[in-house]
Length: 233
Ligand code: DX5
Ligand code: ZN
Image (tube, rainbow, N blue to C red; front, side, top):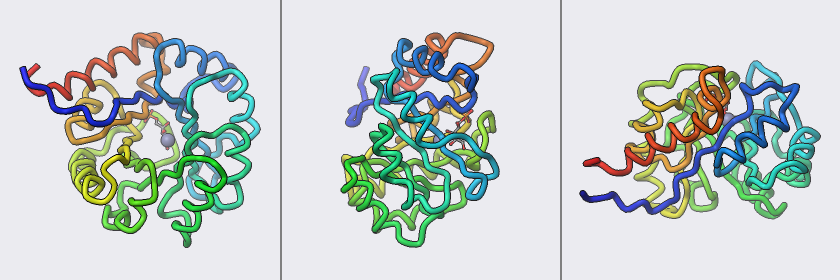
């Protein structure tokens, strides 16, 4: 049995988007107890995406009840104006959308100098060539496998090919950069995403649902992802 070198650690990152917002702290605690590696927090403004979620106040409240690293996924216009607020609220990493700013390089520098880890996200229709100049200065790239805005959507079938090509680009320009995939990740798609080169899996509805506890659901995702890293079983 030969194993592919697992260069980057695998990270399972639950998104609380489909959890009960009346009991967010409980959902975060359940994810943390269940062995989540990082927490994924989806911030939406009703402009960049057609949905509204929460802002820095909620991130700060959750920060007080969790020790997990916080990845804040900013699906907002004018992210520049909110970098400090989210960093002060406890964000460890800020994902900003390539499509949402004119001055991506400046925004990435601002995030780094504020003391957070800069990362960029790509919508499904955004070509990976748009990453080439920014990749050397970010810590993570997130490939959206659904159109951002809502949990519970289906994985876009062309995503593994995009992940594969993105990993090749990262290996060339920033080999230590992590590669995340977000949207429609469940057992089957987790395996395909990892096989294609993703190391970080964001999962909302496949973690927080009626079918299983977050612990059972995270365990299933981790098993599928680990199996996908071991080609001959
Ligand atoms: C979608 C968000 C995702 C979402 C994933 O806009 O960025 O993080 O919560 O939810 P699922 O896993 O249900 O597709
Ligand atoms: Zn997200």
